[in-house]
Amino acid sequence: MNKKSQKIEQEIATIKKEMCEIGDMRPGSLTKQMRKAKEKYGAYWQLSYTYRGKGRTGYIREECVDQVKAETVNYKKYKKLADKLIKLSIEKSCLKMELVKKESAGLK
Image 1 (cartoon, rainbow, N blue to C red):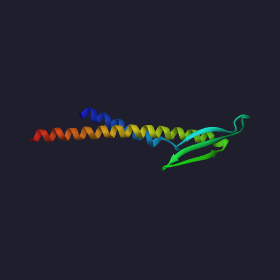
Image 2 (cartoon, rainbow, N blue to C red):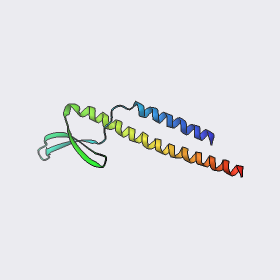
Image 3 (cartoon, helix red, strand yellow):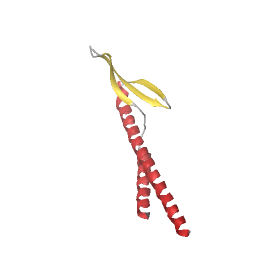
Image 4 (cartoon, rainbow, N blue to C red):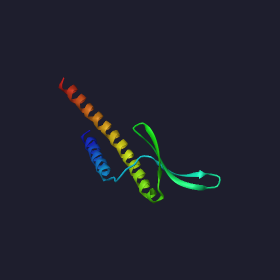
């Protein structure tokens, strides 16, 4: 179990390092919208996201689209890493509890 625990520790350290290296983040989905769909007139970029339980929508200027795309990609990467970190932390905690259980059973 010690090797498994060490492997989990290394993975956790790697994930934390990757999380620190992520740049600016922004939640949401960036989509191109049309004001008049039939005529394909009046295209604009829209960012939609939920933050603290509230849905929000905002217009994004054409010159800022690349920046916002990069920020949303960073956010998605961060969320995946956070999910993996939580999974590994739970696994690590279960291993610790199992080890305590075995040690206390051995003392009796």
